[in-house]
Amino acid sequence: MFPGIGGKGINPRQLERQMKAMGIDMYEIENVKQVIIRTADKEIVFNDAHVTVIDARGQKMYQLIGTPEEKALEKEISDSDVELVSQQANVPKDLARQALKETKGDLAEAILKLSGGK
Image (tube, rainbow, N blue to C red; front, side, top):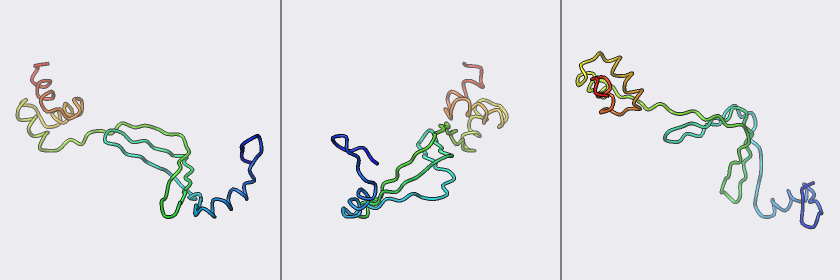
């Protein structure tokens, strides 16, 4: 029973019929292995997700229940950035790439770091 107004519960079958009458369908997606939400700087990963779809006259809403794990995304370092830092700081490319990772892709900061300016 679902809690209702005035201490009375709502019969789940009755609730389901009322939702159907309003054009709302609800169902669970079976065998979900993982759900990932990606933003510009992080990923939120649900490995134990339960996903319910609520379809209200063609508008689908997804309800997600699970334990989130946040992971920061590493900024993609382009080869041209590595080449530029390597040339400007006069260091091998592997050191330039490492400095770019440490400075989160900041070219000027990586060059200063490798040139001993910081």
